[in-house]
Image (cartoon, rainbow, N blue to C red; front, side):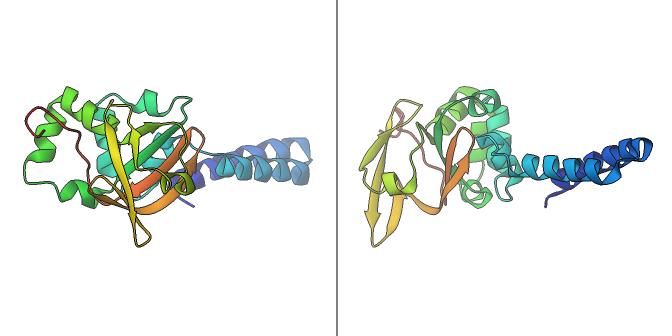
Length: 182
């Protein structure tokens, strides 16, 4: 259980115990709080909430915040996000991440290139050869010896289900075509 969930659970339990101590119906109130805490913990999170709660996505979360995409990726969706890890961002050439973070339009283009409209589960991804991204360009998809590639990135974890879509973890930052690299 992560710190935030533990804090919420503790607060719910403390409030419930305080209320039940006054009412004399401690067992019923404690059971209600335990059920509410379990439901809160089990409730599906949005893509952004899931990324925040998952170790290894702090750079992605910071980039999404810098591009003002939190509200969009917390919206109804559904979205499929090919999510680069912190290690994927760290593997970019020196100075690249800082330059991209300083250029909001470029950052937004790169991040939306990692997002496909709709909820595309792994079983569906492997049947595709390409998918149009929210950015407008298509990512190439190929499967070789059971390994799924999205452009030059390898999919390492699949089907992290969220309330508004799904996340597939990739090991590299993928880049859309630009006039300078086309």
